[in-house]
Length: 161
Image (tube, rainbow, N blue to C red):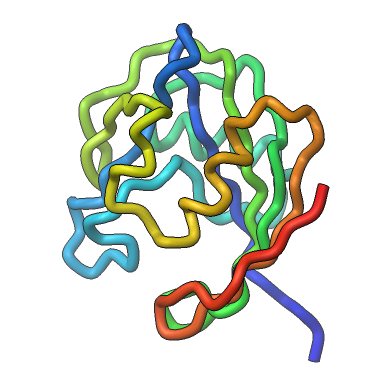
């Protein structure tokens, strides 16, 4: 059977001092699959856009910020991750220059500039703890990982560069 995942973007916007990143605390919608968790910004790709355009659109829609510079940090295949077991394929970006001011919240929850050093202390998807260090590690090579989920739980993690 062919692999036909939902294609999405996930972005981490750096503060000008590069010590913090913008996260959304998903606490606004009771039926949200991510309820209570902190997440980067992003979402599903539209049929008529490339991944860079999709990332720019999602950052602007969710934070009002305009991306001026960003790097693809990696890709992750998440088989079984969706609320109903759907497969997802994510393109992860680090947005290192932007303009504008983010509001205090969006329709998904509160927006918060979080110290990168304390990301692992937040309520995150358990799998995020494996790939977030790669997003921020400074290695210029992108990573490409696979992280299967079953019934909302990460089963394994593997990646290459």
